[in-house]
Length: 368
Image 1 (cartoon, helix red, strand yellow):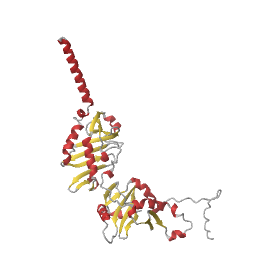
Image 2 (cartoon, one colour):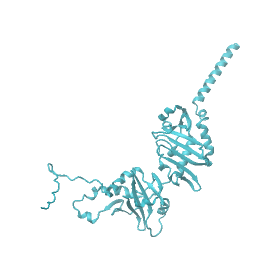
Image 3 (cartoon, rainbow, N blue to C red):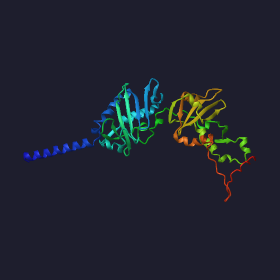
Image 4 (cartoon, rainbow, N blue to C red):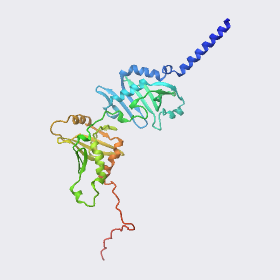
């Protein structure tokens, strides 16, 4: 084999090796992770023990949690205790993200991946992480839609146009499609007293009792004397009471929280509910509506006898705060507010076919 032929073969081999290296660099996850967001993730991993604040912002709300001397608190909600598991999940999720594919760098197409910012559709999330008390974030990302198979998200660095498809998940705190609402950041549940632990519930002059696993509404004697009243089983107010009030304190995770204000106790159309645990311990619950939302104030009633450990622990979390009921519960409670304001619908009276309702006869006019 002559020298020129050997040289041509060597050149061909080198060319193939170079092409393969380029292709691997374009497709290989390790090479992709060495630049851009990958650098940030490595930096975040090193600084994780020094992280002191995490923010998540959407088009409708902003959440900021800070590490204090007594643990994490939600400073955007007057310092209510934060759920540390959510903070840890967000940070671990960010550290574990791996870039797998380069996506669009055109700002006018960011909306297709929900990585536009500001985002009029309120689909994007901006996540910022701070360390060592610095005013500047060590991570500032716009997180977009979730990606399936394998699980991941679209994202880009705030201030940069290049977007990426990343493998991994941000969990409860940031992944689109998960429980990334305010409630996932708030410490809770703030009460976990099940319906089976209650004996009675008093509301609006009516009393419910718990016997043999069933709740029943005691019908007042006046009601029993009214022969035209609907039977108790067909009473919408009673149904709403039995379906909601015994469960107010069962695994109660608030949707939002704020400091208690003096006017909360005198809010119009306020519902008062007394939940009796036993002969010596009660809970005083006050509920009111603000728009479509239902807020609740909880406080232990006048307790006698030995302290109830579970109630004492929960009452410490309630003191000074009012809580927004989860929206899924609000629909079940609405009939009670309608009954309190006299707007609860009642069945229409049926009339024989062809009959008409005559107006009341006018009072006779006096003769002059």
